[in-house]
Length: 436
Image (cartoon, rainbow, N blue to C red; front, side, top):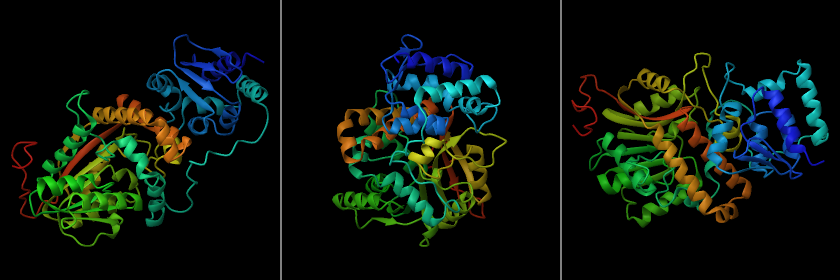
């Protein structure tokens, strides 16, 4: 058999009802599909067996992580071409068109196509998921225990790996760009400084950084603005790394790092709180409590800067889990909400929301730089984690960059104030003159 690619292309087009936007190269060396397009390389037939047992995104992801599937050519172009078939939703927002088509087994033609795929790949049970996949969670969402496990899966993969991907700044959130020619380090420094200016930090104030990562925000705020800072994280590896950075900078008298959940912080009040790229882990069932906790930890007139990824609104959904691939391999139990819902819940907790800045394009630029770092250090990244983990991150970051560019998701900085009863919020008369 030396025509597997042609047969698979024909079957895919029959099932999807549209021409396949990428070429296919099969395990037998055959190729088919539009000339000049990126090529989906099916290295092993077991990739198709994964898809038969788990049609759609998760089956594709397992094949990618295991090395059964690959892309030759421009990865971003391939993901952009495939977005409408795999990641973007039809009128049934929870089901990709490909999955809907494959499940419509009452259609005789589709049943025949399925039999043809089985004949092509052979019978058998599904291969075991790659070891990088997180186990399926049991029990209620977003308990202290389950959140610690989810954070550990994502962040405790080795500080050496994150150094390779993030670069010297060790900032794992959207940078703030003047232009594509700016360095990643300068753009991340600009983001940290933007947060400090929005919070109007002054020497001697107390800052709480929720989800402090490797300590970059608290270090910047203490060094450049003279605050006393507490950073909290659920990752032991992050905390160890951040404490060393703080000691090396001679700031142990002003900065404290704790392995602590936001629900466990009781030593308020703080003058300001930053939450940068953490709230995506909170979940819809806990978000009101999250907002109320942070409001209660602030002094009257204190400011919160909440930097958070958002999804597009859907009136049919009250809660939203991230894509299957990200849920299983990247952010277990992560959830995204529309920015309007976030603003509403912050206000319901007592905050006065004073500014919302959308910086969606900035995250796409940031992700593309992280992919460049990963690809430039590929052998080392695979050695300090695993080849599968490195593949997870390459796909995750490239796919997210495309999602930001296509406006599937956004990211926003929401500045909110615990306005005192007098109504004097201490905000400037002119917007974005943060110090007044």
